[in-house]
Length: 238
Image (cartoon, rainbow, N blue to C red; front, side, top):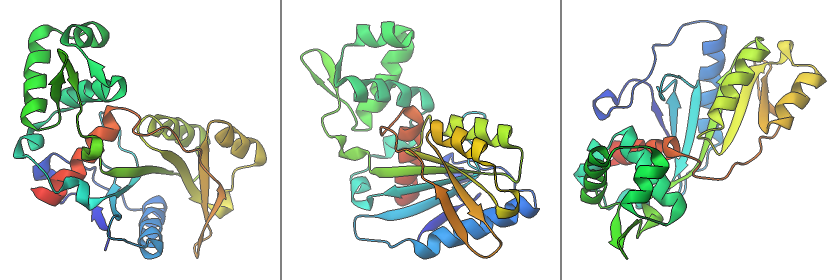
């Protein structure tokens, strides 16, 4: 059964915002139940659903994360101590395959001392190795997340929901907005979402309909994608 994360993993650093009762929140709860019911779990696929998790200074309404549980069987406890800064360094190495310490300092505009401590934490976590005096990720299977779907729920307020859905594209493989059928956006607004690769779900108080598919983004996208990957590992192992 898929897990829903509200405030039950604070001890692992997964923070969520207190929900405000109302029409939007009821729609969000119905959508989560809908997605849980239609999801078909497999041996190599499970689903975690985060309700308003804190990511930097934002709180996306819903994040659905599909992952392969086997990717987290090898888990060093040191990974639980990794911070966002460490994952920024890890993401840079992930994208460049082989990176020297001097290149990391220059390209990330960080000081040597901070980098040294970060590399030590990543190395102790079993995520980094060294080859030809450069840092490498020898085993990329540590990234067990297969897709991240972000859903921003609003009734009206199209500019607000559009801006947050754009922000969500920074870490999600797909970004959607969710709204009520009675406040269906006109064709111009839907075209605007589609132009930026944002999908649209509509709810009529009975069923959810996807009227526009989201564009699938390159994945993992940035350090937040890796951050969410670490959430899953901590939930399974800690």
